Length: 188
Image 1 (tube, rainbow, N blue to C red):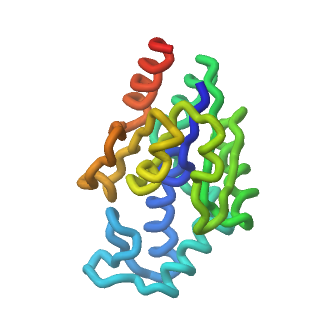
Image 2: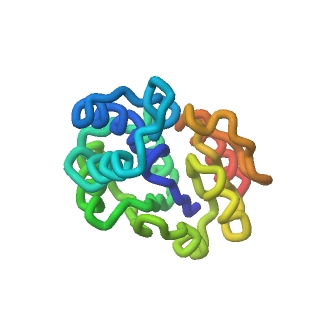
C-alpha cells in the first residue's frame, strides 16, 4: 500500500514549536488552537506571522519541534507491514534539509520526503497512485478526492470542529490511524 502523509500536523508538531518560538523570539503567548492569534484574542499580524513561519520552518528551530505522539512508531509499523510511506510537505526549499535531519534524529527513516514548496498544491504529487493520504487540513483532503481513494483527517485542536469532506475519515491519533490503515491492508 502506498501512503502519503502531510509533515506538519501529522508527523511533526510545528504548532507547539510556533508557540515556543513566539514566546522566545517575540515575547508573546499565542492561542494554542490558532497560532496566528495572540492568547488575548488579537491577531499576531501578517509580517510577524510570516517571520514566525520562517523561524519555525526554514531554520534549525525546526529541529526542536516535538514529534506528533506515536508518529515514529506508527510509520515504522506501517513500513514493517510493507507500506511505502511518502511524506509530502509544503515546506519552503530552505527548510527541507532541516526537515530531513529532523526525520533522521527522530528515527523516521526509509520514507521519501517531498516538498511541493509554499503555496503549491499537493495534488501534483498525489496524482501518482497513492492508496491513502493523511493530512490535518480538510481543504487538502477535499482537493485530492478524485485521485486518492482513502483519505484521513488527522485530528488537531485547530480542526476538531471542521466539517469533514465527503469520503474523509477522522483519525484521532496514530494508533487509531494505524488501525484504520490495517483494516485497508487486510481487505486488499
